[in-house]
Each structure stands twice: as structure tokens, then as C-alpha cells.
Image (tube, rainbow, N blue to C red; front, side, top):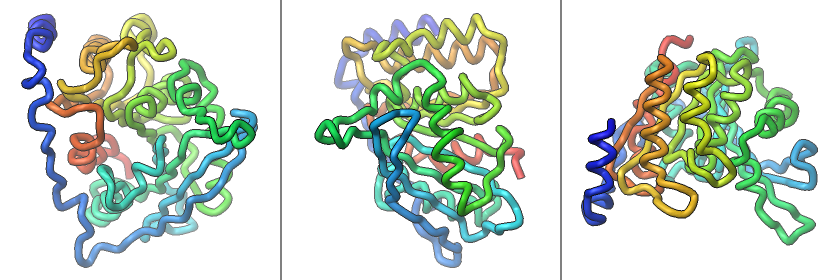
Length: 282
């Protein structure tokens, strides 16, 4: 690990920002004969946990969902980016293909935008909600959004049937929610996660080592061309996270490429990351 970090620091910028030319595979493209789930939204939600904020959210329900059988659920921060069927992630398309092939369980997707303050000309509450190291966002999901979605579709309430995902600050938010409430979420998918000192998130590599192992499965993605600024060095932060998870014996994977702070790499490997994350769940 030390040799790898030293090598990364010595590499010229042209090398660090190398290809970043990832190409989507067939599981990210609509396929003939594959039933398509239904996406509802954007819907509006006014929060009490994050008082004064409102946000958009979308709900994906797979074609295979049956009302008598509670479905697994996966929550996505920055939901508009993940639900976009022509974006970098294309989650509804990937879900359709993987569920059809029985490579992941029947899973409802909940895509949530960060809150804004209508009374303050739409000021974003994203950094506070996502980067803060606390249980507030998990409480927002537990007390507000998931019960609201549960009024129209039956969701599993056990942690084994729940996953959470995000990109950048949404990635550390996903980790924080599961870290604070492993009884709510047992699976985390982080794309270019901001495990840096935006609001104290750089404590996690050390905290993981000092805390009894929790029942969380984690898939981390980052690239050598990710950010390096006053908040920290994203590639090193994700490598430190992976080293701490390994040290504590977590069920984890780090997919480390040459990409920058975007969803290109994470989007291309989304199908394989979901298969890995949901393995063993029926």
C-alpha cells in the first residue's frame, strides 16, 4: 500500500488523468424481451427532519414485483442522476436486465434529490445532508421517505434486504447511513466517495479501525484522476478506507481505475457491482 501511494504521488498529471474512456456494456442498454419496470416521479417531499427543505424523488418498481411479496429496496442519493435512463448510471435499465436474469433480487429503487430551501431562493442543503457525520440522514430515510414509499409498494424492513448508494458527497452519505444504522442498511455502494474533510468525513478510516466490525458489505469505486483540493485527496482517502476495511475483515471491494470525479467508471461497472453487492440475497 505504501509503495502504491508513493507511486501515485510521483505520477505526472497527464498520467493521473489518463483514459477515463469507459464504455457502457449490454446490461446498461435496454434489451429485447426484458420486462421494463415503472418509474414514478419526480414527486415532491417536504421534510421535518431537515426542517424547511423540500426535494424531488422518484420510485422505480420492477415488473416482477408482486404486492404479496415485500421487495428489496435500494436508495440513491442525487437521485436525478441515477434514475436517468440515458445518463452515466442508468439504474432502471440495469435493474431491469439484472432482475430479469435473476442476478439480483426483485428490488425497488428510491432516488432522492438533496433538499433545497424554497424560502431561501432554493438554496441547496446538499453538503449538510450528505457530508455531515451523524445519523440525521438515516433518520430522514427511516422516518419519512421509506414509510412514504411503503404506502404504495411493500418494502423489506430487514437490513439484509436494503442497500444505499451515492456519488461523491452522496457516497459518504451512503456509508454514514449504514455506519450509523446497520440495522437499516447492510449494503453500501459508493462512487468517488468524498471521504475527505468537507465536514469531518476524513475520520472514517481511523474510526473503522477503532470500532467493532459492523454487519455492512461495501463496494467502493474511485480513480487515480479524482479530486485533490483543500478538503483532501479523494484517491488516497478511498485507498485508506479500503485498507481499514481490509484490516477489520469487512466484506468489501475497491474498484480503482484511472477516472476523474464523475460517474463514467462507476456507471460502466454498475452491473457487476450490483451483482456483487446483492449476491446471496433472494
